[in-house]
Image (tube, rainbow, N blue to C red; front, top):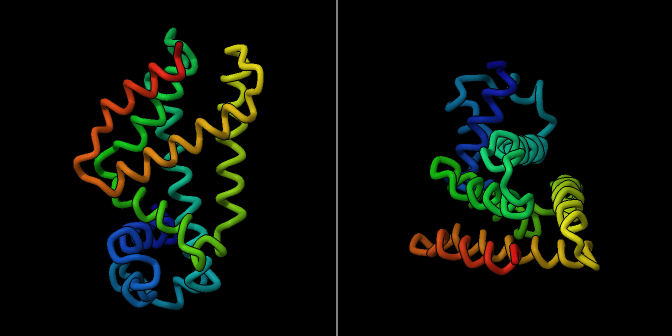
Amino acid sequence: MSKKQKIIEIATRLFSEHGFENTPVSLICDTAEVSKGAVFHYFKNKNDILREVFIHITTVIEEHDKCNEYLGSKTDPLEATINSIFDGMTVVEHRKMYQFNFSVMVHPTTRAIVVDLIEARYQGLQTSTEEVFRTQGELNPSVITKMFIAEIDGIAMNYLLNDDFPIEEIKQEFIKKYCR
């Protein structure tokens, strides 16, 4: 692993554990066992580290989707999409990272730093999901996709904030709702 990648992975973990505002660059340096000079060789400032962490989280999400057993199977494409999304959000070792990711997107200060990255991620999800709805014969796939994503976001928020959220039951009802 490169020194830059090590810094990004350590920053991801520390930001997830302590929050962006409560993680000084010095803690990232100490934990990654690198100098401040090394950190600032790769990153202009702490905001730049946050942007790279957000990109890293997006990559983790996308890699999980690519490896998902449902996508590319004989399963209904919409059901496969739903299974992939739910499977991704429930990876136990990623829970803190996803909680941090959600926090970044809703907190005005951090959101402003990564707003273009949020938009790019959203557009990718919108495009791929809209295509699934289009192939399912939906009359207004763009609007249905926006509703679908908004519901997923609400489910994810509740799951990430509540340890006793019945995610499996919600997933089954979600499949029933959309895969008629």
